[in-house]
Image 1 (cartoon, one colour):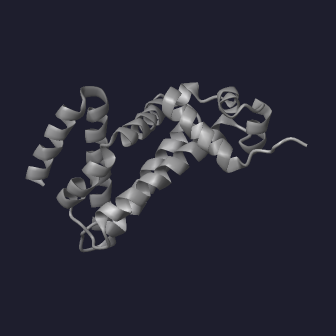
Image 2 (cartoon, one colour):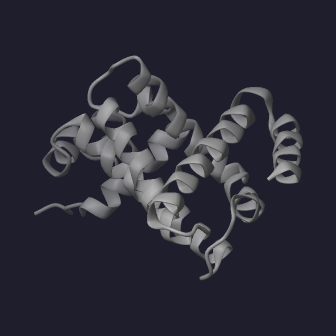
Length: 180
């Protein structure tokens, strides 16, 4: 009986393919080729492309959350401090590749493509829910609104980084940090 790949190995291969080829290049056959296995083996663990994309994005998001948890510490922060602490974590070459995928999802969602509409909504909601208890504010509602505004601000700066380059985004982040 031949070697059977575990779902974690297949997910790791899918992440590598997605980071190298983008979501358009993430196919069952490319993931299988990466591991030198049949694409049917990939389909066994991830029956649809939506399942595969969701697993890839979930794994990459969990890695980013771990980095952000260390950067933020345990005390609630204001928007300016959040940006100052998050920016170095979110602007590495590895994070750039992750956010390229993130913005592909957002673009496909804005074009109404299924399953990206729901995935994009879940991603944004997940980030806001994660940030809310880490945000300064007098009430849960205020913290939620501030977390939403922080996600919007950071997403905008990261999108600027993707399209205009790191120098432009860094300059904009510094300017935003001055005003917050």
